Image (cartoon, rainbow, N blue to C red):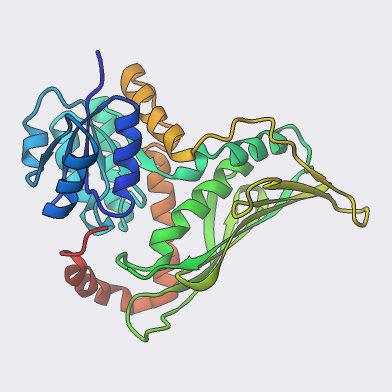
Amino acid sequence: MSQKVAVIGCGVWGRNIVRNFYNLNVLDTVCDIDEENLKKVTEQYSGVKVTKDFHEIISNPEITGVCVVTPSHTHYKMVKAMLEAGKNVYVEKPISTVAQEARDLSELAHAKGLVLMVGHLLLYHPAVNRLKMLIEEGALGDIVYAQSDRLNVNYFKNDRSVMWDLAPHDVSMISYVTGKNPVRVISAVGCSSEKNAIMDITHIGIEFEDGVIGQISDSWITPKKHVTLLVRGTKATAILDDTVPENKLVIYDNFIKDNSQNVKSDYLEIEPLKLECQHFISCCESGKKARSDGDNGFMVTQILEEAEKMMLGDKVKKLDEVNFALSRTKK
């Protein structure tokens, strides 16, 4: 059966997903509440239907897969509606900001035999997968520590906090490359540079299985982009810098000074988002679970929910008001 995909949400990131599914010849419909966004879709993508009513997607039996790219606080209701309608779903991260909701969605997908995939994009990054292979081969020795820094400027700040916007990438990536699940949050601190309820700088310490320690720093206010993953083993340390055009992955000997080795790009430099979209289509066709499935989404949401409670305490309850204020803001 040929796949037909609909994308709900055509904002800044949604446009990239629309482009990829169109280039993969499966894009059927784009849904958005903004007339200008839909007008751009019509102008750029011949033959693609547009609508402002997501119910048209639910009622269309020809649409087999739906990509939800709406603000995170809308994910639960939107994804649940699509799953209940029998649609396979690819939802942008985070799957939810509430662990119980994430668990419910994962269980619903399992019960219905549907694909539920979360947009943990870096699990599809060629350099990240090359690092995972090196770790599995023992090139670094036993893993003891990982550090992910994701610092940039965001002028929109339309998510619950920078942690919910960026840290799903960090948690899922560290767990993926090391093969260790997160066990507990050790520390969590954050800051709002605008003195409101939305944190735009966060630092989280996490214990993973086998005592591996992970440190995650995320920022929406760093003028110079900095995106690195450091993984320390008992023999060597790897640094993956995703801001450089080449030599993204370098291995350093722990015991010999100035002894580093560039990992040759013996992998195809394909856009990670294209690979992610291809993976969703493949899962829809085969029925296999996605690499970043609902269980993976639940794992990430659970650890970030714990971090937020540690970071904010009773202030977490006040975020419901912030979410309501954001309900009219597109991603």
